Amino acid sequence: MKGICLLTAFIGGVAAGAAVGLLFAPAKGSETRANISEFMKRHGINLSREEIDELKKCINHECKSEPKTT
Image 1 (cartoon, rainbow, N blue to C red):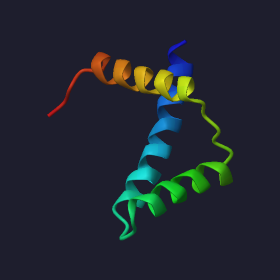
Image 2: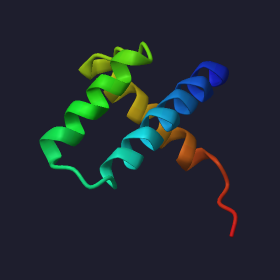
Image 3: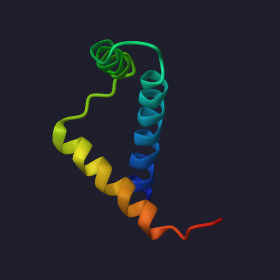
């Protein structure tokens, strides 16, 4: 189960990284959302609202369970 959650967190991280990269690009919000949607479609990432919520829970759980380093 931890391996699946870790993989899910990794995939979410990749998607989040791409989204953040697009968010800092000089484009309108509607264009940025369209770019994110197109990027996800091109890479075969089709997540339902429930899957996105589950991904957020897994990432949150992993972040809380890992010891913080400074």
